Length: 123
Image 1 (cartoon, one colour):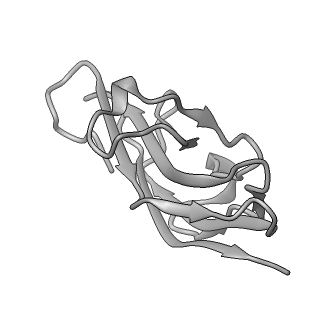
Image 2 (tube, one colour; image 1 turned 180 degrees about the horizontal axis):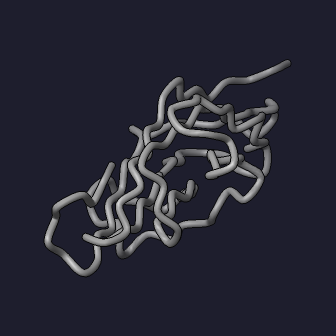
C-alpha cells in the first residue's frame, strides 16, 4: 500500500486475511515479512486480530493490535524483507481474522509490502 499521489489528506486501508479457525488446545503462531520503500515518518502499518469480524464491516469489529509482531522500520533499510518473528496466537480460539492497517496521506507516502503470511500450529 502507498498513498502516493492520492490527493487525499488521509488514507486508511486494510488488508484482511480469510477466516482462520484456531483450535484452543494447539499452540498457534503467526509469521509474515514486511518491506518498505520511500520512508516518510507518520505513515504506519499495524497488524491486528479480530474474533468478531463479520467478513465485510471493518468498523463494527473489535480489533486488537498484535504488538509482538515486528514491522519493518526505517532503520532496517529500504527494500529489505524483515520477518515479524513468531507471534503467539494461543490466547485466541475459534474463527479469527488477521488485519493489516495502513495509515498515510498524500504527503505521508511510505510504501509497505506484506508477504509470506503464515498461521501454523506447533504440537
